[in-house]
Length: 111
Image 1 (cartoon, rainbow, N blue to C red):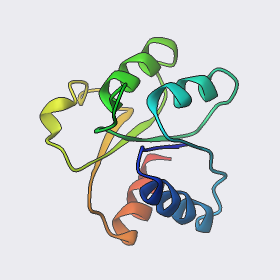
Image 2 (image 1 turned 180 degrees about the vertical axis):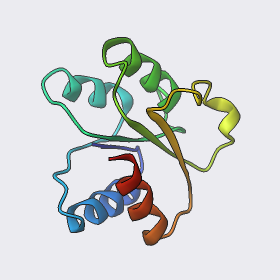
Image 3 (image 1 turned 120 degrees about the vertical axis):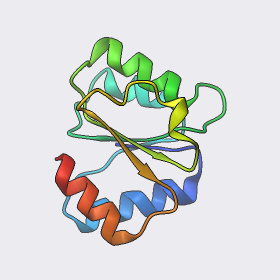
Image 4 (image 1 turned 45 degrees about the vertical axis):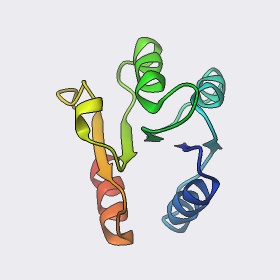
C-alpha cells in the first residue's frame, strides 16, 4: 500500500510497483490507511512522513500497535530524526527524491 497525501507521488509509486508485478492499494492520508488495514494485509506499506492531519509517524505508531511485524518503508524528504523506531528490522527509509533503480532495489530487498 502506498500512503501519501500527494496524488502525484501516490500515482508514480503505485505505477512503479505495478510494473514490478505487485498488487497495489493506495491511501491519501493516515486515517484512510488505517481504515484499509482493518480488512486487508500488505507485504509492505510505503508511508510518507509529512502528511497533514495524522502524520506518517503518527500513522506508523498506530500501525505498530495492531501490526507490530508489518514491514514499513518511509518515503521522506524529512530528517530521519522524526522516525524514532529505526532499530526495528521492519522499519526502513527511502529518502525523496529517489531513482527508479533505488526504489526497485529497496522494495526487492525488503520483500
